[in-house]
Image (cartoon, rainbow, N blue to C red):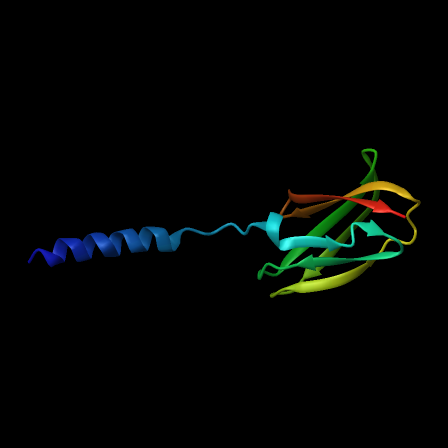
Length: 109
């Protein structure tokens, strides 16, 4: 008889926590290599959801390029052409669902 209240409490807690949506940690699942770019770079997305990922390249707070990627389910790696950029310091900002999720500084050489 003592097991029934414990079982009910366990099921109640399981249902509450089971309903919560987890937010992916995009900070650790998005990367760019190399950080010193000659002509192109590899952009990696290691989260599983299919999402539209917008990236914005800026130099001295001025937007240089804005592009959207339709990322498929599963991990995805793509090559991005940065040959048109002049040499200098830049940032690439990744935006998912209207929220900036990661910024990576890089150098165009």
